[in-house]
Length: 320
Image (cartoon, rainbow, N blue to C red; front, side):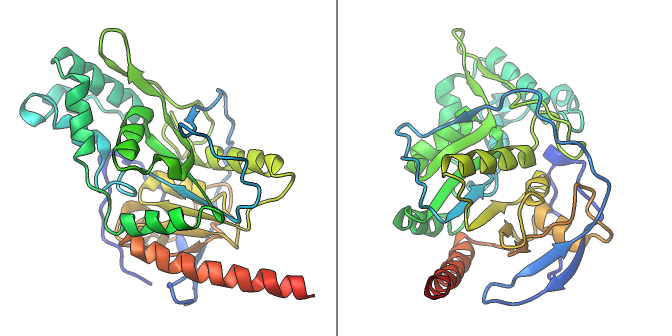
């Protein structure tokens, strides 16, 4: 087992706890299977989700074998986009009263107040965009994106993030990465007629583990069901989830035993999956294999291994 360092962020102060790592095996990329049990909680969507397709929507892509799901903050980009935008504020910081207004589990509500404050201080769209475009990618992300670009016949990619549409779309377009993603699921945000960036919650849900504005497991499950229907009943051979935060644990529970979860090493998701004792407080055990990553190149190495394994399996099945 890998020792985990505590690196939680205030965005998700209420973390998932009581996780047991019960099995492990090594297949070139340090698989770790994690299982656990706990009370079930309903996952009921009460409002239609918001998502954005690419500017030029790709074809139905029924032949793609893999679905890879990315978080955004500290997974695709090297820091939290909300923190980067705060640097556009006067003095590059928020007033104490605004920082203290955060309520656990209500981060979207808090960011609505932050964006309203920036507007009141005269922070214009150009300043916010400039702050976003300065955020560097995570280490090795260029290699991972290059791999996906060269394998678009096999990989379908989406973003599921608790950031917002303006932040994500701005960054992806600046770095030429938007065409990689079939869809972006995140909180809707846009500038109104007065020049204020207005943020709204993604949806309502009944998951007790997640922030009130977004349950990523609901999003992943619904996307998989819809894509299976669109693909004439064909499921993806494997689902891959790349994340870093505490809110990336919940969607990982939607994955099956043949799927893979990539938690960023020494970040909250990794620590929660590997470091705590007990059972997962969720709708069932984590069945997917777990592969920690520090660089996008770590993910590429495992994808190459997965690709070879599934290709060989398909060839063997075809010979039967």
